[in-house]
Length: 94
Image 1: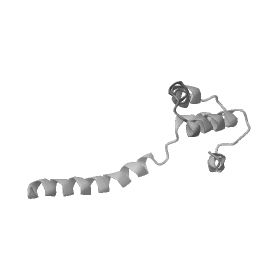
Image 2 (image 1 turned 120 degrees about the vertical axis):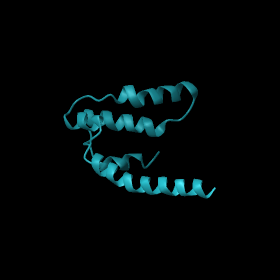
Image 3 (image 1 turned 30 degrees about the vertical axis):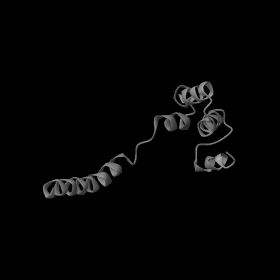
């Protein structure tokens, strides 16, 4: 039992050591959808989130947040909104 605990502690220490390194390495990456929006390109929002909304509609499951994301991304594509954290306020009344 003690051997198992020491292995778990060792794994935990390794994870706590490696996670900050991995996060730092990837902190400059941008999601491809954000890159598309910044370049004024049409995104794949309907192929990604749209599927979730379609299944929700089909099976009677609310997908209000997913629907709102689709609405906002289309709004950015059409120039109604700009990419940014200010769009989070659009979720307030859900």
